[in-house]
Length: 223
Length: 223
Image (cartoon, rainbow over all chains, first blue to last red; front, side, top):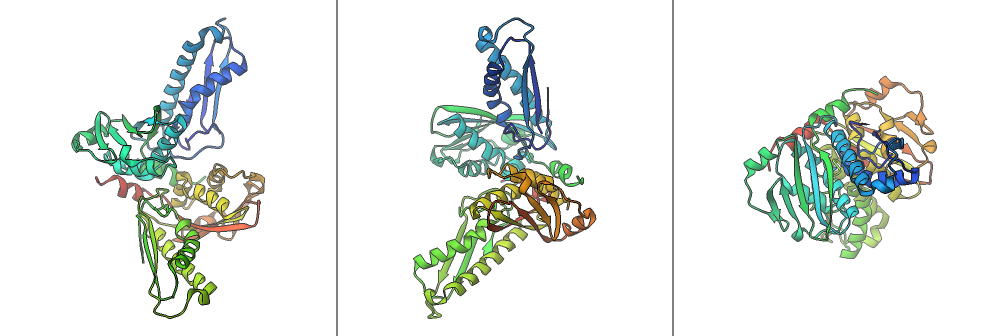
């Protein structure tokens, strides 16, 4: 179970998520399993770049299955990640004013953290997010945001894909069908791929567009 | 002279600014003078948190006055800062969809860089910027953004002021006239003060609200 509509840029600090299992495990084992799953799910989403003061993810185990975590091992970890990913995507889809949920697949990074830094920079750019709101295949805004992520990128090694279509090759425009790209970006959910040309690590990051509706929701009430 | 309406979060990387003087000075002297002035002006503004790829500030000196920089010294530096500040504020006021220009006065920081980190975190928060668009004295959003700035703040030492009115004292609500605050925030320009309770350094940072107009401008055209 999870809740959270705006102010979602978790660093485990108003997002609330509770995961229950009947596995037999110690708090330490559960903590380790959850941390690993949260890293690729709850900590790989952003709606508006605002970190809340009270993000919480809890994993509770009743032990009623009688199956020890050690025995379930990889199978348990995969199931946990699947649940966490599903909840994370639902949180993004439920974001204030959100029209599109975008999966940023960052590939060829030197580390997961490097991939996350690039993903966050793209996901938090108001210019990128408004282009997504307009279903505009503006890869230049994405490239610029990646460029100021703090990761020492070489633009000449960067490829960008919207769905299956390549739109940027080695940092420059790659001929593509603009109408098809616009149609693809008009779907409620789609994927954008960014290859960094630096290493072998990759990360999926879940984010959304920035719409006039978001502004209205957050500007037109007094708190 | 300066230009720049969106994508303004300079780190000297589409903002263009040119400053001319008739002082006599070496390139090295001009560079030092400009860097100092730019630090408190062009590098102390943000419209949308998007750093451009091509920010430029140039200072050119004809030498036709016959007055060497060394002689003009402090007077020249003050005049240069005044010009840079004026241009910087004009850039923010000219931002896409901007209705309010806000000066964030960050005080009691341990260093200028610390003050700048807090200012940028507040200035880049979509929740803060939309509250400003609604002229909503929501100091909690500002406190939260300061809290995730990366600076190790103690909320119990933080005071927040909207114009002359204190709205937050030692991290908690301070009784204030909400109607007066809303009216103050309805002006085209006003100041918000944040005291960190950590040190003696301070910085003024110039920023703006995030409006539906900004989203429309950046979503409704294809590039």
